[in-house]
Image (cartoon, rainbow, N blue to C red):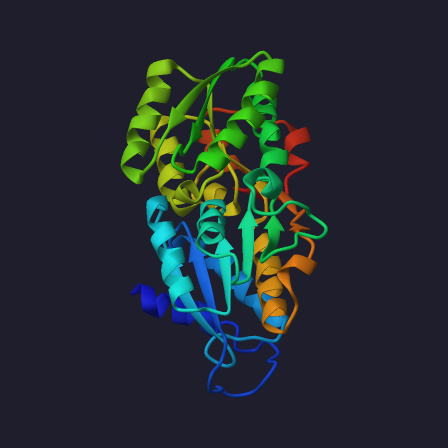
Length: 327
């Protein structure tokens, strides 16, 4: 399916949502949607964003127009994309990823920005206060950094004899990479684990990452949150199976594609909230008056078929805590 057709299909799924006005209107507002990933891999989050937008009374091509800008995992494209949206004088920028939010913030101090990020927005410099952000920026945070320590703990619970593990980050997405590294390595050491830090900046690096895991004889791999990795969940899950490396990443898509464990904030929940805030801006709310929201839904998925293939016995205590067990 062509990308343009794909976007139309997703946007069309919102047709049943309530409208602020019926029929296409002249001079309708324009949303600039800026994202570091690709639309094909973000179907569920994008659908959630459109749902949140619909809850506020707006539907793409009915009473609002959305200009999509997808960086396809190439973060260095985001500043130019953000500048282009500013030049087009969009009504609001929905910057749905940490790198996209930073690019939008650097591009304008006047156009309202709704961000979605897994990092601390104060540390990023996006806002100075969570309750009253002030300025032209507010948005939604996931619990990415807060739940990151749990990734190593879950693998340790499943593989108590594994003492050497690896953490994969994307150094180009520096804010997420640095925060995840701090959040995973310190708790890992407290469990007596030795971590090797591995890096990937494009899909071409993935085979080398898993080959390095075999070379280093790591017992398991933690994949840090990043749009590059979310966009390639199926590829990463396939490589983890091919190389026989027990791996954990966030999102049901990873476990459904054959990944061993998935744990983290529900990105769709965060995108729905971001969509709703975007709609509220269009209705006249000021971003500086809207407190930064937190998406608090956290999910655990276990792929028992993969565990069996890897020769692992998943404890009942872990199975009992799962939101879904894939067999």
